[in-house]
Amino acid sequence: AAGVIQSPRHLIKEKRETATLKCYPIPRHDTVYWYQQGPGQDPQFLISFYEKMQSDKGSIPDRFSAQQFSDYHSELNMSSLELGDSALYFCASHQAGSYEQYFGPGTRLTVT
Amino acid sequence: AQRVTQPEKLLSVFKGAPVELKCNYSYSGSPELFWYVQYSRQRLQLLLRHISRESIKGFTADLNKGETSFHLKKPFAQEEDSAMYYCALPNQAGTALIFGKGTTLSVSS
Image 1 (cartoon, rainbow over the protein chains, first blue to last red):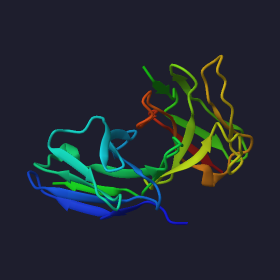
Image 2 (image 1 turned 90 degrees about the horizontal axis):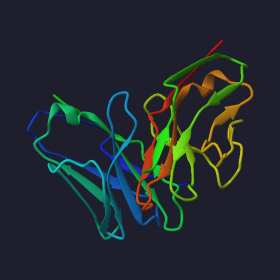
Image 3 (image 1 turned 45 degrees about the vertical axis):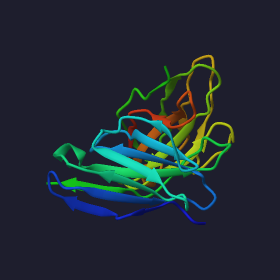
Image 4 (image 1 turned 180 degrees about the horizontal axis):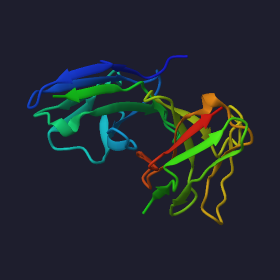
C-alpha cells in the first residue's frame, strides 16, 4: 500500500540558509500535518492543512511557512535556519473521519 | 487542556518478561487514543488504537476511563520490541495529535 512520502531524506544546511521539505500524502488523504522531533524529544506539532487550507498551527516559528497544493502535497519552507532547527521533520496524513495519522519516514535536517 | 503523560522514560526488561508501558491522559470528553512505535529513529508507526480493540505484535491496550489510562501491555517481550513508544491523542479541535514524551523499551536476552 502507498505510504506517505517525504523528500529529501537527509538535508544538511548552514546557518541562515533556507530549506524546503516536501510531503506527499497517501492518496485520497486530504489532511497533512507537519511535526518536528528534536534529538531525544517527542514529536511537536507544527502546522496542518485540510483541503489546501491551514487548519491548525502549533509551535511553528515565524521563519517557517507551509502550504498544501492542489494535488494535496505539502511543502514546509524554512528560512534563516538556526542550529536549533536540526531535527527530524515528519509529515503525516489522514483521511477525513478518522484521527488516525500515518507518518512519513521523515526528513533529517542538520544545520551546521 | 489535553495532556498525555508517560511517566517512564526507560523500561528495561529481559526477553520473555511481561511489559507494561504506562500512559495517562487528560481530555475533556471521550478521547480516541493511540500507541505509536518508533524503531531506531525511523518513522512513527501506528501500533494500536483503542477503538479497534485489536492486538498487534502481541501488544494490547485497554482504555480505562475511570483511571484515565491507556497502558500498553505485552505478556512476553521480544528483543525486536526494543523501540520508542509514544502514547497520543487528538487535540480538542481534532486538528493534531498530542504525544507523550515517549518511553524507550529495551529488551535484552
